[in-house]
Image 1 (cartoon, rainbow, N blue to C red):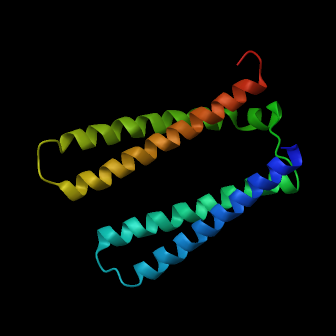
Image 2 (tube, helix red, strand yellow):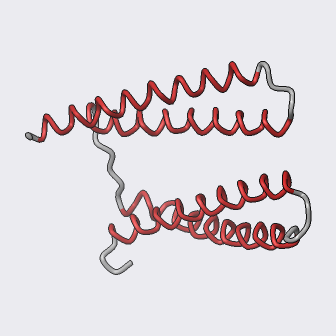
Image 3 (cartoon, helix red, strand yellow):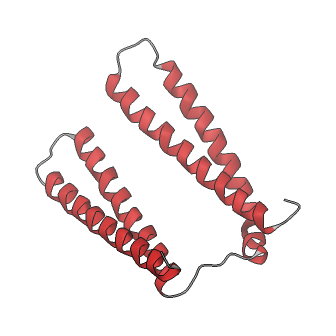
Amino acid sequence: MTTKEKIENLTNNLKRWQNIETASVELAEESMGRIQNPLVRSVFQILKRDSEMHHILQQLVIDSLEKESISLTPEDVAAIDDAITRHDEVEKNVVQLAQYTLDDLSGSGYSIQKFLLNYLLEDEKKHDRLLENLKNVKSSLYPYG
């Protein structure tokens, strides 16, 4: 398979994936119109927003393949290096606090609260991984970290 064919295949898959994300947004919107329960409504709002963000990121990848590649220079990262580090520290603290909070509910009822706190904990862990991965990209730009 040529490079051109690989790019075409990748962009076609991403566009199909975008269509699924769009359908997911529409389904969540339609469902939220009928949902009265605040817990279930919140879950569908999360699904909708995540699908919208996925669509945006997929478009960024598509554009980077079809239009203009994305580059990241050491200067780009240096301009926000302090913010990345500080935000990463905040996320680590939030993950720890979320875990402590969840641990306080162990052995008790509160199944709905545990459900929500588990979601929040996993989302905060995701943010931490996102920043760690960005720091890894930064390290690959600087041979000495």
